[in-house]
Image (tube, rainbow, N blue to C red; front, side, top):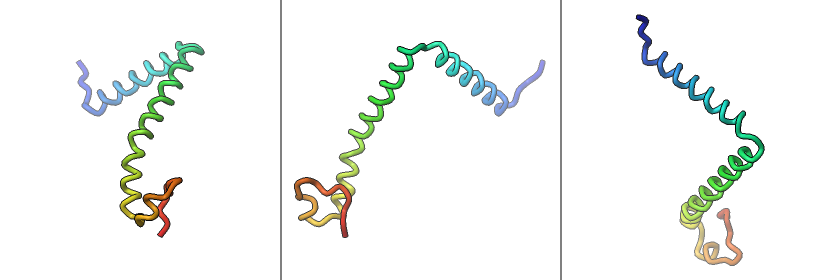
Length: 79
């Protein structure tokens, strides 16, 4: 009986996973592709929504008070 090393098992598992993903994408059809694209668009929008407050907090830390309270907001601090 042949035994495989851990690295060989991981490589085999990765190949099987990749084959399953490719097969799934081939069998989705047009509506499946649209759903997949919309799913990733929603995920990207949510990621931006969650990241923006952190960016605003970090950029406000290096702005002057007048730059922080300016309307419309200054997104990139000017020294």
